[in-house]
Image (tube, rainbow, N blue to C red):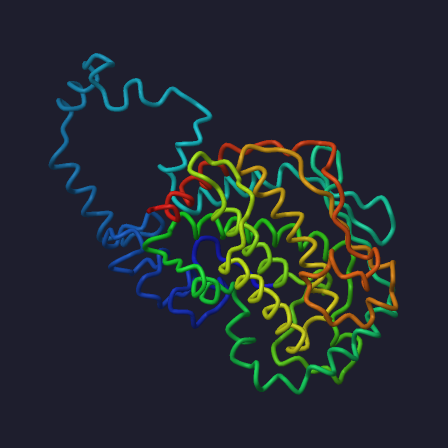
Length: 388
């Protein structure tokens, strides 16, 4: 699972990335103190480390354009004639988000989403994701034999590495180029949509990491020295797959955006070839991680389950709240089937051969509350997509 750089579209740790927010030589770097054209378009005035010459020039300008008489005259003005009079007293206004920068919106909305969740680890080798005291997703660690059986499936896919190399390497970071090729998203025409999707992906990543940490399932290369992955395996554990979670999260949230009417009401989803294509991409992205030697096929199934639960929660909070389904990935059930799993992760709830290992049940007892912050961002994104 890649490290997301909020609102940047790139891997924040990539030192050679031309649009990397931490690249000290980047000509468009917002934190570069010597940058003459920072990301905000104000030469040398990024708000972080402006040049000393500019700071001195600004102070010199103030000294020669502002005097004490002007300050006294301003103080003597009646309140109604002062800037912002009567415009700043209202609180808790979601619409204020339009005044903040993308990173601030990202932090506010992500915090709002995560604060609605809790994690239950009271049962050994299991973790439950809860909201309002009710579980909406549960994950039970598969027995070690399941992963040992799955290892052979990883070996079987190794000959495909050369063919998939380009995809594997370019999909290390979030796969926006692949998704945008289907959705026709562009940072100039769909900035709020992309902001929303970054929030969705980062939120799903936070939950995925919590589940990974609790269950601590080993990577294939930890079980065998013959796997030899073609890229450096992440330091965190395998199950569920973060790439699968994020790819299916993107597909499900975009599908809901396309099926929300102009009043913000979620409609029954018709057959949409764009959604079908996003699901096909998600399957291949998850598959590529197996071929690369980083995951077992089973990891993608757990990622699909987690994406299903978190997208339900995310969409409900964005569209007025409501009850969501309860999901489970129980690796202790049907281990002999799980050990030979080869199907698409999207068949997790429909493939009878999988028994009861993966399930989607009735609505949770506790409704998910609406998020006014996320609803505002959802509406902005929807207006970009429903422009006709």
